[in-house]
Length: 270
Image (cartoon, rainbow, N blue to C red; front, side, top):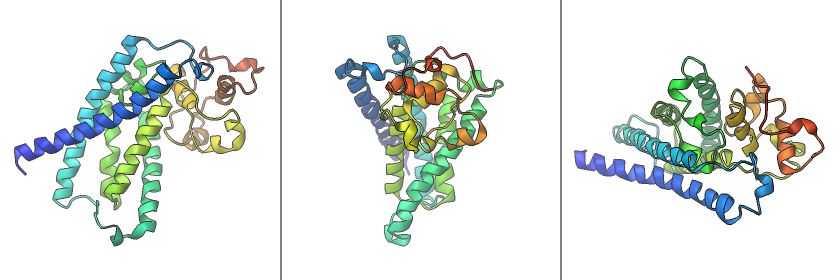
């Protein structure tokens, strides 16, 4: 490939990465923070509005992350062209059943990767060098979805080489996976709880994380490390003990619970 072709592919990757971020984060911000702000006021997790400085910081670092993600995408494209990845184009090669299976497999693998990577970058020896940027958003907005230090951006993108080198994946699955991860990333940083009042009573809380779950991680710091699913935090005791009470307080279920004050949380998980 010529330098011009590489540059062209890089720019396309950047436009896709950045475009996806701005579309998903922008729509969420437009709905919850502007158009329907008053309608959803009772679902605001932290009542204090984010500052314009905080939002600007989130956007600037997210653009930088998109540039980094584009470099990783370019590297994977080159590896694919040379036959080093397990990406395949013909669906019939593995069939539709495998296509569906591989999509869910990428999600489960990514969730495990994220949990352990996330805990690692919270270690006091590396936190201020890698993860502190993301935690500048103590009261996050959808714009915080990709707000990472460059080193963390590379670490976050590390899931893609892991996936394409260990299992056959079709481009359709990779595209669906990217939509899935940006959707959860944006809703996790939304700042509003969108799940129904009785979410904690349905049993789905034993599987999926909520916006409150990750918002609590931003405000209280040491706990609730999971991305999509709640099981790693529950299995390893890193889910905040007052998470359920806080969720119920936010959505107006069980409002009499005096232990559900938020975000003044003094207990943290070591």
